[in-house]
Length: 596
Ligand code: OXD
Ligand code: MN
Image (cartoon, rainbow, N blue to C red):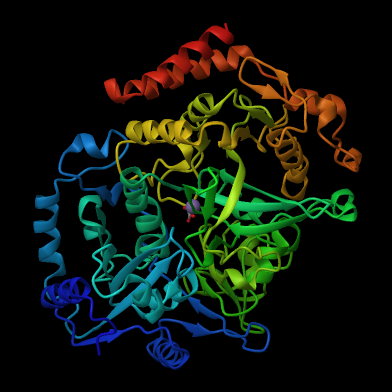
């Protein structure tokens, strides 16, 4: 039975059912009884496998098709009426043409299947910053994941009300999981997302990248707020004061790790703590007091498993100990638990690798094979996280003191620098660059410009997105958070990372929050303000070889490398033609002069 009287929802569900022709329709109310029944059904049809319920209570395992393991950027489209509205960095398709093409693929695609109608809220129920989505899918796996990643069920319809049309319509069918006919298509003007022929999380959990970034960035531009690919964390100082920062890094640069950081001993013993509000997405809006506030629209973590261990991210690992769905990791058949690369040094002997073959894990690894897919994932409830912030469900969000950008740069970018002002900060965000990783399908290890870490996620013309950032800065005035750039990934002559990273990134966050709140000095360089090397606390890092001289080196700015970078930025900016905000051109000219 329909869970809402809202005629806009009912009409769209009716149209979708008429097109896809499912045998049954199930409205997802979010009740435990319904979720238990769906979990059982998903197990019965072999879509998920129960894991060891003593060691991993409430945890299940899922394996995708081998051809369906990552987001597919080349098959992701922004379908605005004109190509220019999507801009030079998005794949564009004419909305009428692609609708006609996909309508054929959706016609009758759910025959013999059940359509699940999932109401969900992105953001805490009742938050003025939250928004409602409805996803229709033929996958129980999607329902179970959406239950972890969003506030799902009846509560979302209660929030939407009986008349509003302000909800995002998401249609997903796994169809035949045919890569040739796989499409992830966005219609920003219609608040609509169509996804077909995939069952991989990033392509099918439509609340996440599709809604909370692509559609929401477009909504935010029109409504005066921002949807960003950012973690949100709070740093509690020994006096109990908590300062919040957001940080944007390209996919697989350690956002989840930074969001759940455990401060090093010297900080812990003084009483510093880190609290996680979000690990991937932030929605930001100016509050009544003029400050910028952030909520995490999500309710869980869809984290990359390989590399997660008790040392790299104890809190993420803890989050996965119950009520978690693992996708494409390896199975340890001895006790029906999970394993992935770098979880520990003991690959299971009796293993099932991610594609489903039973192997001797030790021999398999010795051959150089992966047991888990490099982009294998855990979907874990945020409330499992030992360091989840007490503000996680605060409908107001948290006030932001600093915004941090970053990427993987082997040489160019220093450990940390601060932008001269908001406008320069927007420039710093616009020139972000990083190496590609396994989170997206395609070649690994190529450097690409990834402005604001939004390259694959901006739902409209990136140059207009920059203009929106410049406008928000004007609106915030002197209440604007300070903007910083970090680079944990500088390498030495041996090609190895110099900075220890992980928990020790606290040392850089410490300078950032002191600086953002007016309590730290800085020196002016050609690219921005930097700490004096002695301002970065390296107590206890001697055994890692980190001395004052090493910090000096990590903070050094090689002008010849920056001259090269200026060339790259010019090329990149040229793509945007006269849409490029003149403020950013001016920033680039100024940088060129300063690094001469
Ligand atoms: C992710 C990403 O968060 O690819 O999955 O950015
Ligand atoms: Mn992400």
